[in-house]
Image (cartoon, rainbow, N blue to C red; front, side, top):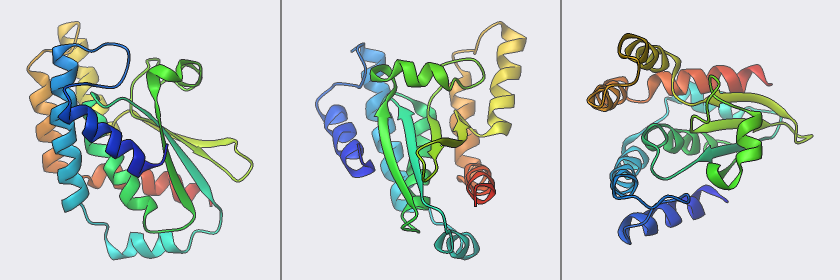
Length: 187
């Protein structure tokens, strides 16, 4: 679905105490509501610098960005709005969001570090071939999460606060740099 449709559905889920996917647990519904607020904040506040905007305006080859996601995903609340902001700067990038749990065959073909980690971005070229992929979180944050898992056998419950702090301090810059490098490498 186009990003605007995705956000409208996401917001409707949050307002009506629902979430995407087959599981409708209180925890996932709470994450959906929190992520809706986070996504709105990113949509309002995030700005792309002029140099990157100029580079995106000069893209020659069209790209379709397929983003596998679920509304309860915390990483997506911080990164998917940035993907959309980048796409809005050029007519060469089109964003489409798919629910992961409705597209498990596709998800399983493009795992993130061996898991169904989301968001998962697949960049399709003009021949509808996957030319690049990104996800499920910026690499430095992925490393921090992996270290915490290795140290504790699993991700500690309170580590989600550390993830949130990381995203807030980073202000989307690592996500932008990683996506910029990927997009420009496909030109």
